[in-house]
Image 1 (cartoon, helix red, strand yellow):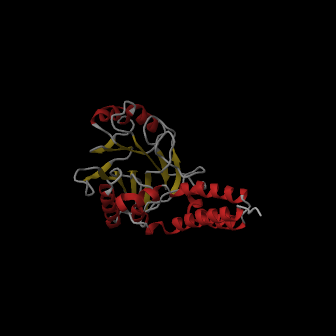
Image 2 (cartoon, helix red, strand yellow):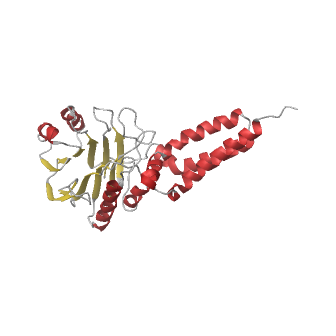
Image 3 (cartoon, rainbow, N blue to C red):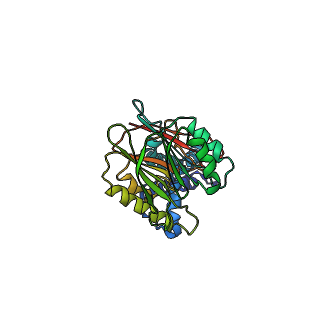
Length: 303
């Protein structure tokens, strides 16, 4: 008698689906050896593709068990990520717009990237990896329309509103890689932190984690009524190291369908660039088209 292979294969598909669902639910239990858990958490939304593949396999094998398990995993994924994946429901016009982009060090297109952002007429522009070569070119492009600026290390901030109380921040890195300013916005001032958090590489993640932790503590202790934190965080919102920031700040879903991934620019697979706010309402959030950097820029409106 010939045995059908549907049963065992259906079991394998079902078990893989259950394991995927468990990973989505309890990824915070993974040991962060060499930053491996952070890497997994950065790409958690992509498990939806794996669940879809498992669903096709379960249907092809006509496995009831496999299909039920895949459905359970899909339900977990949807609960976690659909609110972010679906277009944000925003109402009203923004009173303040902020653009941000990592322009990539030693990039000959730095001037054109700055012009592309300025042409969108945001109130504030934050740039990261602003090296000595690009600083003069970028300033020449932005200064006429943005007369107020603060540049610390490789982080630059240009504003249409006057800037005061500028403070350089190293966030535990040992050299300044962030700046805090107050913008003279209507009503009460708006405090803005422009940051470039350290990069992550295999086995080298401590500097990033230190900066994120100190940034979260600094923001938590800040009693400003209106506060914005903007820049390249080198981490996704699904990363456990990002969660302390989200306990006091909020981020708007993108205006279009999708996760608003920003890196790498040619085919984005993760969102490393963020605008987080407190005491303000997120109104719009857009990821901009590739304009010559290795990150895509973001444009966020708040009220």
